[in-house]
Length: 234
Ligand SMILES: [Zn+2]
Image 1: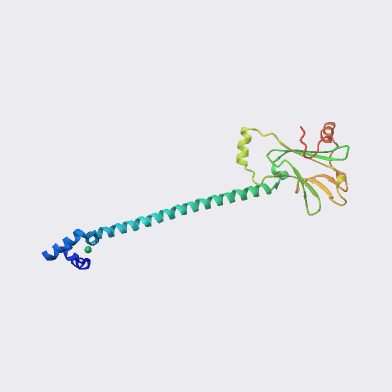
Image 2: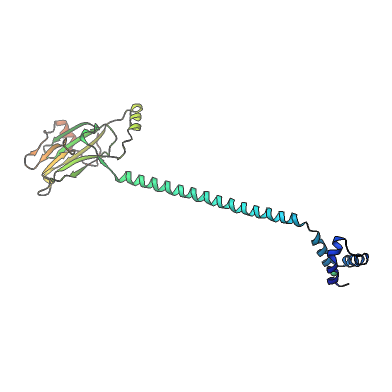
């Protein structure tokens, strides 16, 4: 029996509405033809369930994509946050390391200040500091061409932490020292040398009237004659 004829018959056979003769022919053929048995089996396939299954798969696919998307999004957020944090920290570190503020005379940071002139003519300055400042001096020049010996401090005082730390572990004074010889100044510059800036600046030396600080005591003479910038003594 030809497969085409049987397949025309199959829908009727499947629904049980064919004649007895047709049913017998179909069954005979089906017994020996796997292809037609498959066609019949497909008719029995539970269509609504298949539809449901497909819908279920779609939902699963959508859910998987959504999950992947959320994962990528979270990773992007974390990466972004890490980059921003690194940039902020780097920026702050750079700003903190390059920015320096002058310690002003009226800041309360100076515990004492002493200056003297050695027999050699060198002028020596020593400043005791209450707080952690940069333990170095440098010259700042003002509009009139005068030089001001200044001490630097970090831009943030962090007084809360410093205050608490000082109570627990009393700080030793930080001492900043500087020595200069007015004869080293090149012609014309500077007219005056001060310690500090602004109204409170203390005159150390001027071209017009020379040294403005007292002569060194014997102890000062002994200490300072062996001292040079960058060399730590006592
Ligand atoms: Zn067949």
